[in-house]
Structure formats: structure tokens, C-alpha cells
Image 1: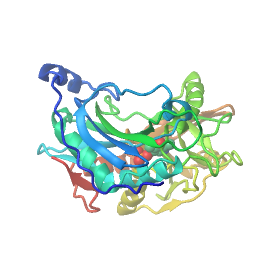
Image 2: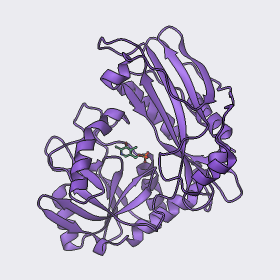
Image 3: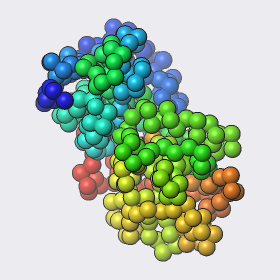
Length: 367
Ligand SMILES: *Cc1c(COP(=O)(O)O)cnc(C)c1O
């Protein structure tokens, strides 16, 4: 990149003249669902080759004006992040390891030939947005304010090269409990027709293109009555990688836990990383190594694998009840949520919601 990232932009707030009414907001927060409603403001900053990052602000939420030739619309030069703000029982609002999201966004940006947003600017953008829209942070249950930082190539140019004009934005959306009726195991479709990521590709970058490429597999999963897709490695179609947007864990009969190792084609989930630590805190032996689909099948058949779960910011920890493929179906733990899965889930949520001591220094107070 030609311009060096500008350290620590500030985000002055222009309050919305037409915020959502209190009654209307209360109605939304009573049943927010996921990703359907958006707060009154958004954070935005612009980058150009010549000026670097500038024009940072929190402004009223609203549509973007994009030139139809904007590079992102043609060549998908885009990266994003996902994290949550949690309201604690005393009313305070906290984020969980936002520095890790900032670092990952910088890595994703490098892979997509986008400029980096430095950590201080990333943290300031989410902090000012959450403070401006604090009333949108729900209370109770496993609700939260979901934050979506993202970066798009806005330069109007159809030539193929890294864009010279880019926007960084953060939007926020209230999210209800992922499992309003209690934790329910998901069923997973094993994708044997499609892969998600190959060596040298963009698998370890959080970019929209990876999701675009996974949608047809997701449709196939739905056609087979499954909630999520599991992808295998693109080289040998043998090793388990991850789901479309969640990392995987295997629990063994001796209490040891395994998650597929990061080989460059797996997204480095912050929840995944946190669970490596939390499971160790709970006394589990945790290893990161390759897990083949045969090991998964044989492990369940022999009773060596007792539980399987998926993890990510949106759902925290999700038990996997079934693995379905063209070759048949595997059921874990009678299709019910496992004990170890639920203990790890509880430990993570207790930390995020301030019900347990933050021994790793992962929480950052915003309000
Ligand atoms: C975001 C994402 C995850 C989960 O990451 P978290 O930081 O835990 O939310 C896992 N896999 C993919 C492909 C993702 O995009």
C-alpha cells in the first residue's frame, strides 16, 4: 500500500435528526431476531491512496451512494468482521476481545489488497458507535448488539487492480438469543461437491467472496434438511475444515478435545481461539491437528468421539446433533446437546455477560 495507515482517527458524532422512536425501538428489542434491524447511526471513514484514512465520523444510518462502477460491485474487494457488545447486569456494556477482531481485519485486508485500519481507529469506531446507540444494546437472555465492521472498494474503475478509494464502515444490529427456546443441536450437511477454500486462496480471510461461494452448498444442505454445511479440504477432500461460518470441535471419551489445525484454509475464529483456552481452564487437554472425515465417522461409531460442537460469535457454541452426507447419517449423543459442550458454552457466556471473573482480560468496557 502506498499510504501508511493513519494512527488513531477520531469519530465525531452527528446525531440522527430522525432516530427510531422509543416505542418502536422497545418493540424491536423485545424480539430483535438476527441482522434484521439496524441502529440509528453508523461509523464511516474514507481512504484514498493520496490522503490515507480521513473523514472519520459517526453519522445517521442510511444508504450509501456508490458509483455503479465501484470496484466492490464487480470484483468483490471486500472484508468484514463480526463482534458483539454485551450488556451486563449492572447496565454496563462490554465488548469481547475487539483487539483480535481489529488484528484479523487487518490480516483480511492485506489478503484482499485493501488498506489496513489500525487497532486504535477500529476500536474508536466501534466505541463511538456503541456509545451513540447505547439504547439499542438489549438487556436480558443471551441478547446483544451485533457489530459489523466492513471495508469496501468504492473507486469507480473497471480495470482490475487494487482500488485507490475505499470505505470502512461499522453498522450495528440488535440480536436476540440465538436459541430462544433453549439450546438445540444443529444438523450438518457434508459438502462433497463444493469446497470453501484452497491453499493460497482466501479461506483464512473474512471476506464476502468466501460466503458467496458457500451459498450453493448451503442451499444443498437445506434441501437435505440440514442447518449448516461442513467443508472438507480442497486438496484431498479428506480433512474436516469448518462450517460456512463456524469452527468445529470434537470431544473424546477421555475428555480430550480436538479442533482442526489452522492450515491457511480455515478462518481463525476468535471464539475458536478463546475455547482453546477456556477448555484448558476447565481441565481438558486441547489439541489442534488435522481430523479426517473417516476419523469423525469411526470415532462416533466406536464411541471415541462423544460430542461435536461448532463455535462462532453469532451462536457462541452450538452442539452438532447430526452429520448427513450422500453416504448416510451419523448421530452424536442421541442428537442431544453434550455435557462438555454445554459446560464450555456456559463458561464462555458467563465471561461475556460478566457473570464470571475475566481472568484473561478479554473484556473491554464501552459504557
Ligand atoms: C467469522 C467466521 C468464523 C467464526 O469466527 P468468530 O471470530 O469466532 O466469530 C468461522 N468461520 C468462518 C468462515 C467465519 O467467517
